[in-house]
Image (cartoon, rainbow, N blue to C red; front, side, top):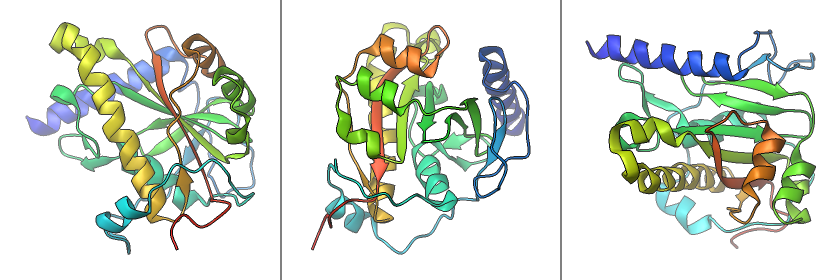
Length: 238
């Protein structure tokens, strides 16, 4: 019965992605491949290891809000670990994720903007699906009140949510539960970034409609938080 519920959940999520245009077609792209993925293509991510060399206490100690980045490009392994930390599957039989969710309703949808594309993370398959084959970071900077410093971040994560998923069970309380869940998931990502030696910062000052337009979000999908990630231009902790 547990396995059946998990399978049903995966089917529903993938169906939502298809209806929103996120999964139009699948290609053979990979983050380390020579081919340039187009809209609808899938980018495979390396498996995320469940053991690291940095303790949770050290990651908490090292985490800082970083706003200056070098030009260093992240590896596919870094991208994989960051996304897995935020919303990766940690219990496949039930489809449980790395961050808590009220009633297992999982309203969060994460988008990743890079210099080459804007993609959506699919936790059930641990992959990225290309939404746009263009750099939407300038549009996000403009939407975020022209905070031009994060235009240099090689990775810009946008946490969006479909509140109706949680509201179906919890009604008005969903307006409280969803922001809490976004906070949990984004903190996971930022702590993982610190553990890997990368810097991050939470950006909440932005015009919602402009972010939605930049990402071409389906109706009912709302942006909650932007998290730029990059290699810090100076050491976070001596």
